[in-house]
Image (cartoon, rainbow, N blue to C red; front, side, top):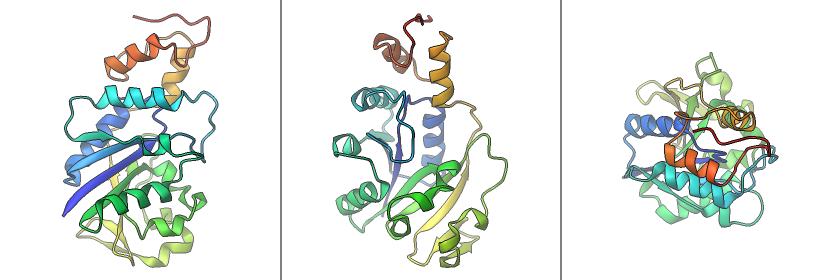
Length: 223
């Protein structure tokens, strides 16, 4: 059975934190591929300062070029309206069929808000979840992090290292290397005219300066 990771996000911009996390998850869960899925209009994020979707797609393409483990999907960018995970996961479930295990990858901060997502109870009947413990979250994942309304539907499986839903799909915590890099911090540096070198792949950095992304009119490119 194939195992495919789905890594959605604004990637505004994509950086080494995203890429290293995906690399570690690929190895830990023995995945066959991870698909990066830039969102067009995320329903749970403020869109001020959000670069055009087409440019964020270009940056992801540059960032993952040459890595056969990763691929890119423009599904959400071409879909009109807001990007809902239940629709995206449903699309890939239909595309790959029952012979493929899907793993939806997200951070603990996002998972803690999953009960606000569209049709969130259905998500756990469509795929597995890999929950990254990102820098800034000191507590390890535990049962209390599961949606309160659904907690009784999960049982912890020590052998599998995750909380298994009655559907058979699981929620698997994953500790990742603590690279304290965020898209917010990168955008802040750019607005202040500070260097962002070594926070992202060089082609992405060059693309940002070439397209004058995230910078104020007074900002100058930093070599």
